[in-house]
Amino acid sequence: MPSDKPAAARKDAHLDLALDPGTRSQGENGFDRISFTHCALPEMRLEAVDLTTEFLGYRLSAPLMIGAMTGGTARAEQINQALALAAQQQSIAFAVGSQRAGLEAGQTARQLRSLAPHIPIIGNLGGVQLAQSGGLDLAKAAIDDLQADAIAIHLNPLQEAVQPEGETDWTGVKQAIAGLVKSAAVPVLVKEVGAGINATLAVELFEMGVTAVDVAGFGGTNWARIEAARRSHDSAMFAPFLDWGMPTIEVLQQVCEACPGQVVIASGGVRHGLDAAKAIWLGASMVSAAGPMLANLGATDAITKIYQPLETTDGAGVIFDRCAGSGGIPPGTGAAGRYADHALITPPLHDLITQLELLTAIAAPARQQRHSARFWQCRQSAKSAAAVRA
Ligand SMILES: Cc1cc2nc3c(=O)[nH]c(=O)nc-3n(C[C@H](O)[C@H](O)[C@H](O)COP(=O)(O)O)c2cc1C
Image (cartoon, rainbow, N blue to C red):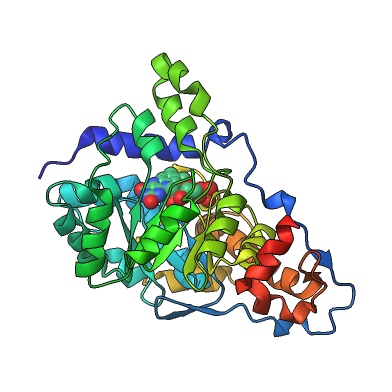
């Protein structure tokens, strides 16, 4: 099938606009409303903090995921490869963006599996596209192509409504998800893209057999703003919707309370390890960040620069070995300088994990006065979530 040039141009425009600070949500995601009690006497070794977790059958270094972003264009594939390598190196999960355009253009993303063999890779397709004729086959092709460990179905009605080429027939999506859950060989995750999944819908999705819900709330990447920026001549009518959505912390708290024991993923404006810790304390099993990871990859030409040397070496391990442990190679000349570019994604991930460790040791949950070493044990507790509101 010929490649869909407008779709490719749209995806590349999304990447540029997502990096533009002007398209970020202007309202709050709510993380700053929670504060932890400082524990002045942790009475433990910092190295004793254990963030490791199981997710989709893999042991991860921390409950973190690089959120679904992109795929289907040459630039998107370079980004995905850099992200996959970073996730593999950090032992965290990695989700790709919608595979629809790539698969329809006859492209494959199967190289990602060989770059990241030891972490969960999560495929992606839109709910609207899943409900269209051939959607189920497309979802199965997406899973097969990546040898994915799970597939995420994204719900993005606001984005589709604002997007000039948006697909706005949302009928049949629930039924299509239920059909996929029954027939897919891997777990099905359902996510929003920045406006949030509410508790009622989350309950319904879990009843349908969905394995995990990523609330993807408001307060980070903002698709109404991104799409409005693409249609500058008639964007005024969307102005009231530019900050539409449910703040991440609110939906997270509601979904965790309504769905005890279920796998809830927190995302939407997670900025650092402290936000991640708050999300886990509220009951999330995993925390995902998308836009911030993209921002830390740097400019496209930097990615091209860094990817080329990768192709000519016998593997990413070489590059990461060179960058690991020393805080990265200082920018310089020659090969070392280029490899240092590649490490751009690594320090933020590393920082996120370090911040989580630090928080675990020195913070006690707000108004709970628990011993810091038990911080992670209370993460699934509905009681602790209720304490936030008290
Ligand atoms: C450039 C970009 C492209 C995205 N494309 C997809 C996509 O194809 N499928 C999807 O499920 N989510 C997509 N998302 C949404 C993210 O997965 C995430 O839900 C959202 O950005 C909120 O997280 P954040 O605030 O950490 O960015 C994309 C995000 C970005 C920044």
